[in-house]
Length: 165
Image 1 (cartoon, rainbow, N blue to C red):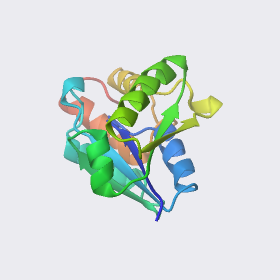
Image 2 (cartoon, rainbow, N blue to C red):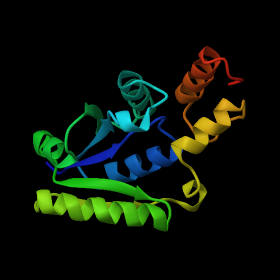
Image 3 (spheres, rainbow, N blue to C red):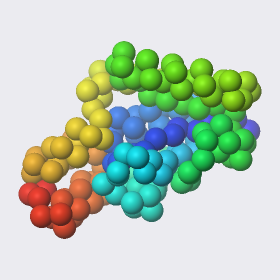
Image 4 (cartoon, rainbow, N blue to C red):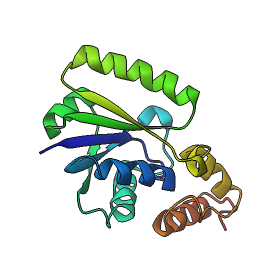
């Protein structure tokens, strides 16, 4: 079985993430969406909430499963018996960062391949941080996220006392 990881913080998962995940799912037998703890990033949603949102957003993709992780990506890949990591690229800045990560991962595990999927033009500008910013200011994020994520953002910003209409 060919298995690939699509790692990320997914705070929250966007339609851009979903595009990369669904395209990866066409290339391999199984995609494991690896939701990182990412404590340094101070996520808006807890790990458990992010895992649940990714599960809900990907429920129509039969060969996709979601797993949390808090370890080196190469160690998690070994544990999941994954042969590849699939990453989405939006811009040159993404490439520079991902190029460094790929080189480091290769040094740690020469058997783990990294595959890049270019974002489609309609998703090249999209990021979780932009979605959070729009939602925090009461903007409409429905075109950028699944309905479950839109509702979760609305609730979270209401809890925090921000607009989040």
